[in-house]
Image (cartoon, rainbow, N blue to C red; front, side, top):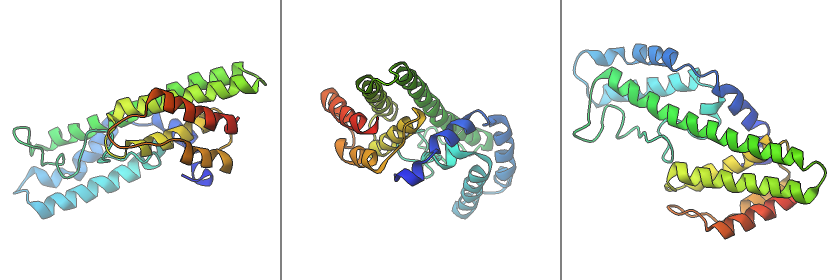
Length: 221
């Protein structure tokens, strides 16, 4: 993510979290999926319904959904797959009931939203430590490094290090820097892009993670 693209992204994401109204969204989803309550459900009807739901989510949900890189059906977080969750669950859990399928979507959205709230808790704690450090650069760097480590740890735990989980971690670290009131300069972005070496299915060793976070923090503060 470039520094321009990420500028104030977290602020928009965080400010939009509280505005989410699941009951209102459920009502709109029931309207969009009403045609599936009657007649036979075949592939073309499901595709039309799926597109209608995707358009609705883009229109109704705020930056926490649109700008986080974590829409419904993403492969890392939420536990929802358009191919195998949308009226096509694996037996014996498959259901063609509209309300049951809406509930599955709402539960997945809440898991995504809960993760973003948890990130905010990490960021706020790190920012408090940064503010306590005042003008002490070493302590400020330590506060940021600890925030970055906790950000990666939380992301690894929440995603179970699924394939490409580190893309979420990289965005989350950029948000961490922004949330702490620090500029995401080109030099900081370069360190973020090069200091951390992530792979799918496994979290980085703690000592490697701490070393990478310290290198980024030294530049960022």
